[in-house]
Image (cartoon, rainbow, N blue to C red; front, side, top):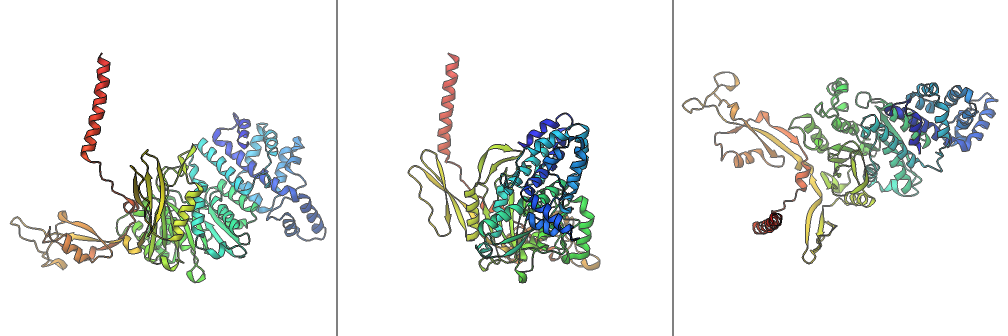
Length: 603
């Protein structure tokens, strides 16, 4: 319905510019519709308290039941009623909003767009169209309105060849993440418990993660309250997020504009819960100076003490940023979920920035679980993605352990693709992954194939017997949930040296300095070995190296500790090839069929 406004703009605006008009007018119509039921009460409060010389704003907001009002004598419909003064009256209506709401239209550069519409004689037609839309909260609830904004942004991003996925995350992914971070907080989810918690998103976009978290919590416990915080880089996404927070009666001063990595606008805050979907594979060169300065000057007192990833992908910087935002354990601790691509699991050798970041979060026992999502889940990429769940308040049964869940097969095909997004997780899939996480047990996925080739699946929890194969069918078992000790992901990289030899094959000894009298290493024969962290390097060297190179030794000064999480390796199931006789029989059958067809052609 809203997208039809583009028909009016065609010719005077380029397709890439439609969003600059349609998005702010959608927000404006939504705010106007939400304020309509209490408008008369608000204006009466204004008149009453102004006559007494008292600031009426607190009383007007109370009458509206919101944190913003509009003090104009006009409604949008009233503005339309005076076509000769349309631009002036619309500007006066915008200026009559509370400062927090007015700021939204400043970031949309709304005045520029209305002036341009007026010059093209389109302002009346566009405003008339929007007034015909019923965007009241009774007709369109907050959840639906959030989806409207996201769908519009996706369309405009496609039209302007931008990346829609920079602005928002698929709702089912957010729902899964919200389920995971709240899964172990029984007190918060218990109806009647008037708990107050904070939640933060450093890459807030249009506020989808924050709003889904609030909806989830209120569904389970209407007496709980979630105070939302966020920061967003894109001005239009920031404006929409702020509008959404206003309508939800949140304090919009908690939503900040700016680059989280270079300018943390909420530097002094710690949070109970956090969610983030940072951009994948985006370089951080623009903020390199600020990030490196914080790393070098503040060390572990700042956000980036453990290390810095390679310049081509800054997603792990957001991981460290969220770790720094955790509320101290003595104050109740924190839990957060972050979506990352595959490279943070294993990129970087021992001693590199990525490895040191993994080392820090694992040795500090912060990683609770990592869940592999299906591919083709996001609007801007089809690559494999993972949800990391980190906390500094692990329950006793999880201490020193990490749970890996392979949910890559839990999806259903969408009726219509949206950009790169072709798959979605259903409610049952989200419930299953949440249960696996809550149970904190190992599990397998049994795929049962019948004689007719039809397949069904069943989850086999630890200690349960797998289902029996049907007659002429088979059962295939694959790991689904696995539990590891933190140290299982660690290793030591040892440097193995071999001696230089002269033409006669004699070992060359050093002649000066600290190498005097010692065997000189031959750099062309130098090698490295990765030894599991829970294994003695000398025992490994004696068993694996010395039988093949009796003259080798370990350069102890070069030994480094590294961490990696080779996720796919832990879930790989070897399937032996079919028997050769079976393959031969099939080939003969196919060959005979081809020869018969050729024979028919030659007749």
